[in-house]
Image (cartoon, rainbow, N blue to C red; front, side):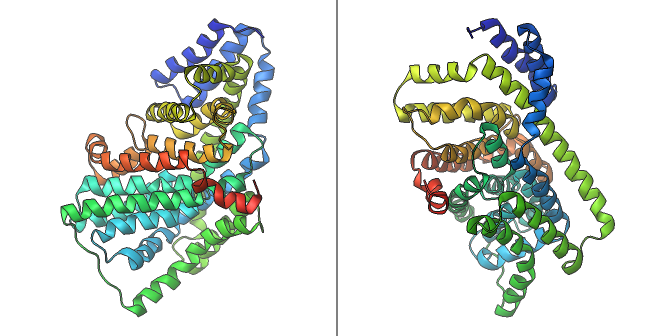
Length: 434
């Protein structure tokens, strides 16, 4: 098929205009796809079928269960116990409560897989605690939202499931395991940054626990933390698939919250289900619309044009990877994470897997997750930035300014993950083979 510049302009331009006028992203994608199909004389029924087939994927079954599990964890008292557990391990350090913030995000990320859920649940607990103990409000928010991005990397991550569905034929389990080490590396890097700032500002050390108190907290929180063991351990050992681990997480979370912690009752399940269904409806609508948009991009040969354009700029692997990362960082500032994965992944994966770069799509998935998670922290569309700032009651501009050292830390980790494949590929290669 010959290249049609007007159709390409219509597809991309109409989508951009609708976004600028604040039309919902899912409807913007669908409307641009249908309008371009009508211009090209393509059956609108074919576009509708692409939308249906986009959500008709077995791997996507894990998403509703992981969303439901995250909602249960937030409402069922597990968040409070995770904070106490983290305090036992790192609370006594200089700026100990900030360290607690990072560690509890690492724990919670292994349960919910969502940066927004992490910030909403744990942030509502830890940010007021930090402010009360003398930490600056902007610093409290920065630590919370930066560490929340570990949830995008550490399994489970529904954004990884979306990435796998967007490019097709990629193992979700392999992606999950690839994110484990990078998530820990990000946590360590943020911990170092946090500690340096805490020492410089002379923030307080945390309290100490007796051995008996520590053991009691560890046992009490162990039931909730076993959810992460079910998810990560189950997938790691190959006993369960990602979908099955999501179901197990829901069942175990319900048992713990209803019968052990007893912070929710059967009556509370309906509001939890409603929140889950609301989130799920948005995610699935977005995936369906993106499938139609992606189909039209393929018809118009946009991915191959972008591949040729990038390779035409340079054949140098380092230059190409830096260009791709820069483009994703910029796009992450103006678009939310899920739609950007659905649009950009099918375009960029052929580029990074080309002989000029030779990157494994699993490694690129982890690079993309961290790259776009930085976008969750940047204005004007940074969802996590908005949530954290609203909890602390400070202006977004203040938070963004205070985030500079954390941005730099995350970019350094991003470059490490981009140019050192071993960080993300060692664990999945040991488990699944190269």
